[in-house]
Image (cartoon, rainbow over all chains, first blue to last red; front, side, top):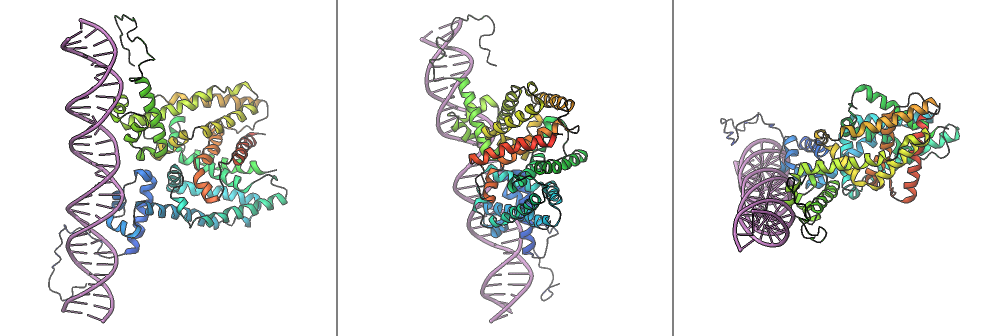
Length: 225
Length: 225
DNA sequence: CCATCAAGTAACTGTTTAGTTACCGGATCG
DNA sequence: CGATCCGGTAACTAAACAGTTACTTGATGG
């Protein structure tokens, strides 16, 4: 393409000419690092994650990682923030207030379970962050307002249900959300020890479907009048 | 397994006074290492735990740690096994079949919640082990039979409740246990991120008591006819 | 009273790790 | 055309790490 004069191939590369990217794509490199870091941190935790491994998974090297993200801790925080933004964004798109209160809560329970199921790396990151007592999350300014919306919307749905007489008066929005999240989180994040000690594979489709129905059932019976 | 003086033992007070010699105490050193390791692994995970730190916390050094436990991984497995033995042993002492089915289940829920509350290191260890997909737990032979008893006893109580017409026919022992464990585990193990994003301290006594009542309420309403 | 054995100490070793530095090469603009 | 950014590479460094070895200390038994 751009031979700039056309005088032969100087192209004296020190490396054996592997099929190199040839094109510079800062955005893609950055995204690749973030994606690789998400997987590495999810699989190995903060202590176990290796910066070299992240660079290799991203198809780049450490220099770029430090260039874009500063250091290991800042990269980790970015990964965590992106993970939270991901679930809360998808959650908002549900608009649980558009249906009947009962359907709305059931919908939120289903969504949460399925999101957890499809994003095991999110659960892992939460586990890691809690092991460290939210050391990095606490430093994040971006995330506070992200969650007030959830509780607000949930609170509206519950109020409506109480007015209609289908929900008990003591139903609390935070408790409802924690119930839904608990049932999904524990089953999936602890699947390995549970499957081992109880001697059955919790990830078989039959069991997954049964647990999905169970979550909706438990959530609704706990607040229905 | 230190069977000092197996055959032909004189047994004539080989050690004059066992209590006096505080300098050397293999049993205590061993126990101190196990205790220190439990805390270190719970606080930092498998990847983040430092062998030097364990030795220092135990008031001894690495040489003794390797002498008694082989290596870091074997020590970790011992810690994990002891943690499981701890909760299952306490659980058995409950005898949930002695009360009415409803009281029995409520009792199990209360016990589990309070045990989790008093043993945060157990929750941490579970989290770490699951991060590694039960890599070490799978190798343990000791633990399989420890859990069949739990499900068996729970199954009996549920059957009795069904016969008496107080529980629904679809109530499943594993599901009931997972429900109880989920609600306790998630609240406590994720307390740091949850407290941060929702802006209230979940460990305040008021909130703890409310969640305790919530667990019992959810568990029982989900299986009551 | 010396040989032996076990509990315990501390310094050492080879490897791994986060983070840095020196350098390369192409695109862009004066 | 050539200076100069900027995306990118590879080799390096200082520290930290798991695991080992050489040694000390003290009790016991022949």
